[in-house]
Length: 430
Image 1 (cartoon, one colour):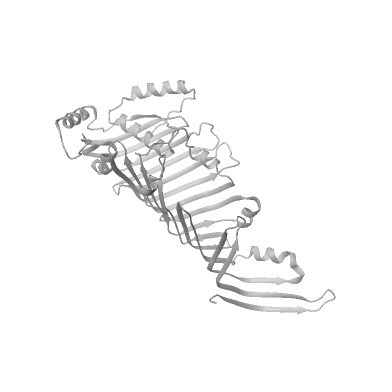
Image 2 (cartoon, rainbow, N blue to C red):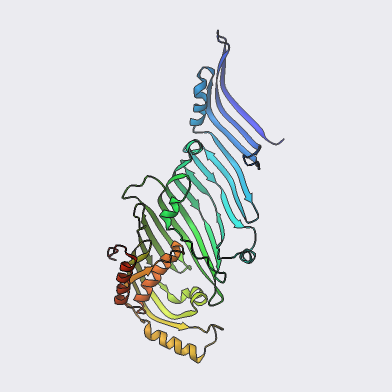
């Protein structure tokens, strides 16, 4: 009762012939607003769309050219549908997409906003778990998808998309590590993960603008909650593909962000599509910042505190594979002083914690103005690629701080290569 339909005709011609009447028409514009659609899916579930709009302009119809009428309509760049709102809520999660639209010209899909979240709070969520699982919440503002060919998707179930752009994505992850970890499941690296996607897919690029990522963890050793977050994230992921790879094809990631609202971070990641050992190049740069700024993360997760110190620069370059990673890192800093904390009360200082802190500072290099550290770590294949990246970064921090010696790490690397029976990793230069 509230929908409306508008039609503007340029002309209509109708003629008589031996084969019956024939006609042609030219429409300046057609528009239908606030439409409702109700149907039942193949699985017998109801599906509804409410208050959406469709329309277009410059449409031509000719009864003598019936075979091409549908083709003309499909190729008309002005055809559109918009104001579609979709939601899916079940006993576990809720997904909402608001203001979905499609413009035939450029085959552009837009979404005004998107949101996904569990339907219960995180404590209730964790109470249902047998093993650790991330509690994930996602929301975005505008999403734009170009070259989304609906007809091709419907006919051969393949997705070939020019780009996807997402404004202000906000990702929040929480994990309770007091819950047992599920062993025996190998987590694939990014390229192998893409390869497990069912339909054929190719996306030239995905871009995130002004994103935020927050990770919270309840640590089982310190019995405390730690949080790390990145803001002002700009990210570009290129060449997402799960078929027809050439020898030089690779997945490429570029990202910049603010770490804890304190330091500028940049990351580059290239992973080969054809390397059977899933080889990748990882590069990380971190700009200047005062090291005590990491204490809100360090204290609950490592039961330690940085009392003093300033990072001048950090530069990492490493090649990783399915089983291990090797490379170099330069972490230049000044006046580093650490303190080990009481497990029962982090603010309470005892003779034991003072002695432990004194001993720790004997082993930790107070200043590093020129030394470069070896990067070596073996991958825990049951953990995610992000865990792998963190282990790579921490291994370089250990050698730069003098906690581990470069020579010993190089020996461990050589021994691991022989034990696993994999080729040596090429040397990298910073």
